[in-house]
Length: 329
Image 1 (cartoon, rainbow, N blue to C red):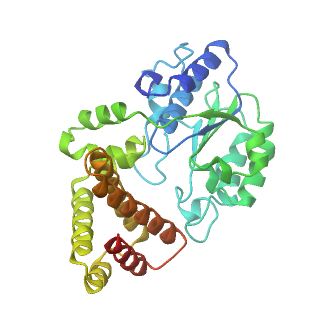
Image 2: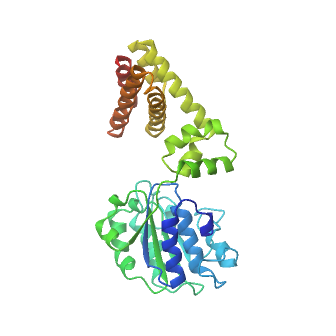
C-alpha cells in the first residue's frame, strides 16, 4: 500500500511525506473526509513507513515488515499480522476477546479501547521501530471509550502513533479533536473515479449514474456499479416514474407497499432517482423550460422525501407521499 497507489490526495500526501522525510511525524493524526477517498489507504501507507526496516523513510513496501503491516489475518479479527499495527473498529473483535458479553453494534466500546489500545500502548513496540493504532470511523467511539483514550492520545509513549479516520469529525468529542492533528482528504474527481471503475472492468454505460451518486467516493461508486444493486436501483426508478405517470394514488400506494422497507436501501434508491431528475432538468433547461421546471420540482420533492426518511418516517409513507407530490407537479 505505498503512497504512490493513492490517487487525488496530493496535498495530504505531501504533508505526510514531508513529515516522514524530516522525522517529524505527529503522534496523533485525524484523517478527515468522505469514506472511500483514500483515508485508510494513506493510514496503512503511513503505518508501513513507520514500521519499515529497509531504511526508506517512505516505506519500501516490499520488506517483511511492510508486507505484514497490510496483510490481514485469515480469521476474525481481520487485523494486520504485524504485531505493531493495531486496528480499532466497532464490531471488529469477538466479544470475549475484549471482555464484552455481546457484539459491539452501536459504538466502539471502552472495553475495546482498554484491551486493544491501553493494554499495548504502555509498552515499547514489539519489533523496535514504532507502534501504530488505526481507528476506523473514530466518531463511533462511545463517550467512555473517547475519555479512556484521551491521556494516551495526548502523551503516548515515544514511537507510538495514532491515526483516527473519520467522515464526521463534528461527532468527535472536542477533547479528541484538540489532541489530534487534522489532515483533510477531499472527494475524488469524477475522472479519477471513472478511471478506477474502468480499471475494475465496469462498462461505461454503468459508470455515469454511479459517479453522480458516489460524490467523489471510489468505494461508493464500486458498490453502486454492482450488477445486482444496479438492477434493483433501475427497477425502483422505473417503477417510481411509472407510478407518477399513472396519476393514481392507488398506484402510489401499491408501489410503496411493494418496495424495500430497508431505510438504507431506500435512501440509496431515492438518491438515484434524484440524480436522474437532476440530469433531466439540466438537459432540458435550454430548450424545454417546462420539462426542466417539472423535473426540478420533482427533484426537490425527492430531496424532501430523503429528509423525512432520515427523520425516521415510515418508508411506505415516505414513498406514497413522494409519488403523490410528484404527480401534482
